[in-house]
Image (tube, rainbow, N blue to C red; front, side, top):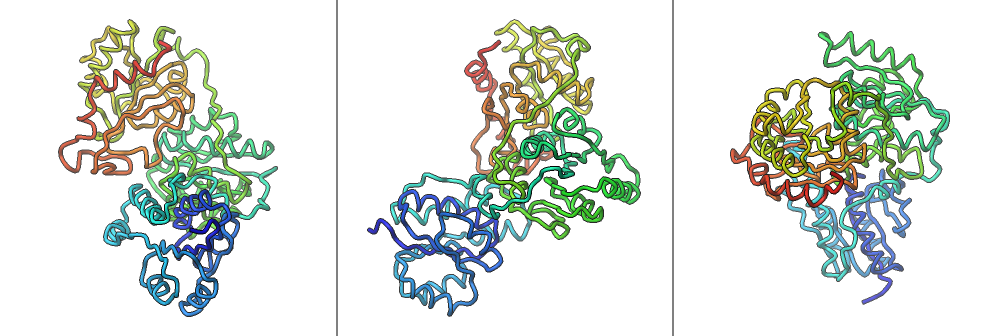
Length: 498
């Protein structure tokens, strides 16, 4: 077998799909550093992909006859068909090369996802695995298994536009957790251009997350959920955005409303995701992938502007005196967030109650229970099960700022998949997260090296992007199979600073 083979990879789809084949290219070059890797793709993507130093040549596909002629002229050692449709089948059939490797597309599964518009990380993960299967017959070790944020950077020219002295707005009007995961993006903007002015457009109930960041200069409130009438609030917000004369709008939120706001406000540069419902209103679109953590996905939005998007941790400040306000003593070092906006994301209350008892008996310190006003009854039942002597329940009594201050002073946070989980991770405290209907692969796991996710490997997971009111299968095994002892044991393994 040659040590410097010539290989053609065929992938005629979108930029997002081109990103998914990056592990294939990197594994080939890891085994054969001198291999010549050619890529056949659509003309509109050829220039962007040509920035990849691992690719020798990029061929824009024009028609079948010209493509076959070029392939036969180059005398490739191997052809990798990573598109596997009628067009690529016909090309390979007409080529003289006999060493053809084709990925198993599983068209039925893909069609079900595409036709029903189902959002699911499993499809992308499954597709990458199928791409990598084509390398087995070439005896190529699989070192790189998923795309990395650096692969996105290769899609953009190296003469990046400067962010310096720019007036930038970041539009994020989603849930609390989404806002917390936007903080590394903001931190990266400020570190790349200290003189830039950053304004965040956010909902009133989540705005404190951004006000707590030293990198945010201004927060504009979007009252979309509190306004009785859509259009007056929408038009007023457009006018306000326009009056700020922003140079750049960066939009992690993938709604049509978010993109339309900055379009009507005539912000010159509008950057968002390829999966955005309002991508028609954007003039710079970045491929979206479920294979990145959400914090890193957001960072890819900067790649049209900066050299790299390596993540930086957020710097958050909170008011002093919050412990005294709620009469919380320094002895309390473990916090628990048993609630969630979605019932299926809640570990059973009986188990939380038993866990609190075990932790209190072990450490002889009360456990702090936090939650929103909507979770008062749920958390009160947990308090009754645990015993009031074992815990301090402040559910529904805190603002977002106060909640952040209390979490910051903890040493361990046990939680469901939720917004407070991401706040705890941002503060760098130890996090044990219990995941049920959602999975780590959706990109919303706690973004911290000091975190651990407890979950069950079930084929029915994930059943939803955010959760649901009840288990679609009726058994709720994703949560019911996670025992109290399993969570308690993980606490004993990881929590050494009691």
